[in-house]
Length: 351
Ligand code: NAD
Image 1 (cartoon, protein in one colour):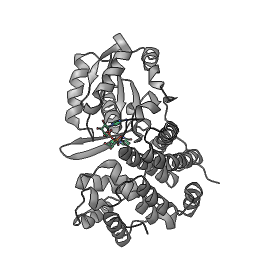
Image 2: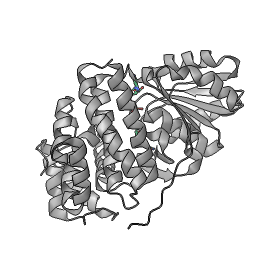
Image 3: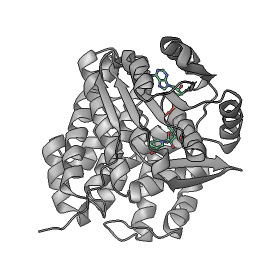
Image 4: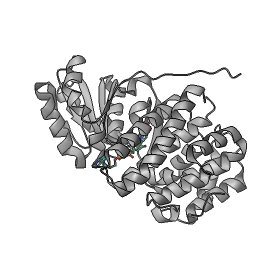
């Protein structure tokens, strides 16, 4: 019998449809008087709407969050935080906006209320990745974990079908790797299986009918659980590969995860027979093939060559994937890893 450690991450979660209406109450409950509402430029209108709903307790809106949390943007936002004498943060958006809230919280310890609008799951993790001078630095600190998360299915309705699919696959990747993480444990595995099932069911429906309320509910529920998985245990080959590929060739985050996941799972499969059995029970087919097919069903690209990776990148990525040793259930072997990357590059089925 296995001894295990389960690290629960403290957060108050409000989940449902229309739940963003609880934001003013939550701000009041936390005793906040001057909150700054954060968003990306395309979601600025949402940020102003939320600021209006908060009334006098809203100090302002900062809608310049961008992908990969550049330190320059955080420093600009920090000036606004100081000028407006902000005492709390509200983030409405995907992982980029949550990243900005976390980066400010790291520097100020300000409390955060996050309303996620994608399936990335950052709101459930104590992890922050920041970029400076082209380099990404990832750190883990309880300071960056949001205090309150308001999941409102309505906020995800506008997420375009294509982005919903890849964002959901990105979430599935967190749960898949949690099943075979070094720190895997029965509680996280329960959540992972539930989450993968919920997303595998709902993503094809969303691809056909992006406004389907039940599918949206299920996908957001799955994404929440996937976020807990990511925040609770360490990730392995798949996440490291995506990090390397994304950083080296500037590839889009969720699309890269979608393409690599079936191949990374196929690589690890011989070392994790029980996990493969569990996944087969959830996905009703060979798990790696099922994930490759799911990517097809949601209309996602399945070749790294289609999202900007050059062919010469296969060897570069292989070298980099092997350069910094990290834990993985199967030892990292050069030729099979190169083969994995080459197949993902060409969009071939996993093997
Ligand atoms: P994102 O936050 O960059 O959003 C992508 C685009 O979609 C943005 O322009 C955004 O405004 C728009 N958008 C988001 N939700 C929308 C909606 N409901 N309707 C219409 N448009 C919407 O994308 P993401 O995939 O959520 O986040 C990716 C970032 O998050 C990456 O930088 C990644 O590294 C980070 N991330 C961090 C963690 C962590 O634990 N630290 C976890 C997952 C992802």
